Image 1 (cartoon, rainbow, N blue to C red):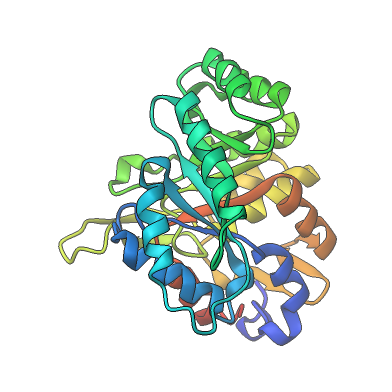
Image 2: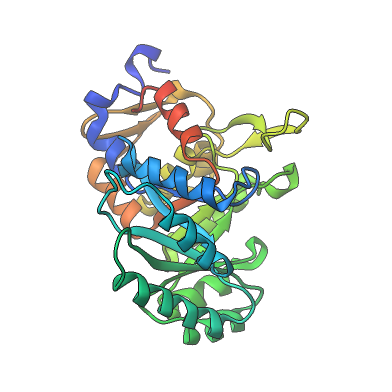
Length: 312
């Protein structure tokens, strides 16, 4: 084991490798549990994150299609002074009538593109499916200009990933929740990621990834909340990069279960976990082509942990 002073280098030294790993990594889902913020608070937070020094880590804002009008109202009420010119990037969750929801998305994007003031664009849509037939049917409904993420059952994902690959869409894995039973076992996560890599299917993760490394935390923000082991987002996304490179399944499980900061080293050329190394280019390629992002109801909690680890 390498000395603690030689691990997790500071951001001046490790800028290239940390940038490759963290750019656009966190989709903000403040509306959803356990944060469950109001739309006004969620929109205000996203606005502040866009203005922060960590804006490069920020991904899309996640909202239900049913709340688009509420989002527009909250957006219009933000102070205009010093408003960033960037277009807000959105990912949406539809209701049951996907045909009607797609029409609303197109209307929203057209109106926003022709409006004044702050602008937003829906770039992706996220759906939970229970059959391969649903993937095929929905892929024919959702326009190709929208990235579609299908959340699939972990118990039988091989056929689902084949269908997703054929449709040119993307997969989604749920990595946690508000109770211990919502956290999939490491072997299931690695099997999913490995099969995504083998099937050439990009994926995103959602829920339970508030912290960089595997560790025990409360499941919610309530004082009486139970605690349990949570997957770390550094573990998950490095597993994806290493599996894409050909890492053995059992070694990848060990990486996903790695809790020790001193087991990792970031430098200007790449990232090392114990005796395994990724170049900066391999990390960036994995992020762009395989492991896209994760949704989190908190943006600052992951940032604060990264600062504590001297990765920022």
